[in-house]
Image (cartoon, rainbow, N blue to C red):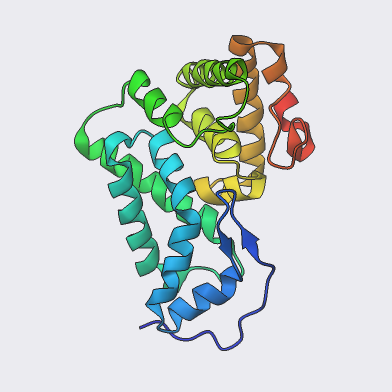
Length: 224
């Protein structure tokens, strides 16, 4: 059993991009570590959607749900080593990515591009069903072209783009999820966006909008 945390600092509530709400992530984690495993369900509900997207984007395919379930189990078992005050999501996604790699490697196969596209595009729509059908078609076509271009990148460049823009992590979260220094995230993202720009056009070379809504956020790393 984990040792209780005697003095848990209160931090702001965490609202996930999937719409879930963890009233105080640090308090929830402290409750689990103090012997209240039922509290872990709050973290699972808040982070399942992004964990599934990460598994699919990294090639888990039909095994994505099993990968995520195993990742949550491993995260639960490792919660005693979780650093107090850190964000749970990037730490979890690092486990998801590693678990996906192990699954793909043990299966001895690489996912086909078309299969991964179908998985990613078949998830929750990014635009409402009531939107103009032409807008929906254009959005899906842009997603397909982006996924095609991503497959032309190296593994490191593909992962940094996936984490920053498909999983919507900021620079610090991406560094934690991938286990890289922030400078490495910035330089690899810059090179990846330049390569994508040559395929998709000048607009993307300048960098898609980051999670904070700015073009080429974090100091304009998308411009090199």
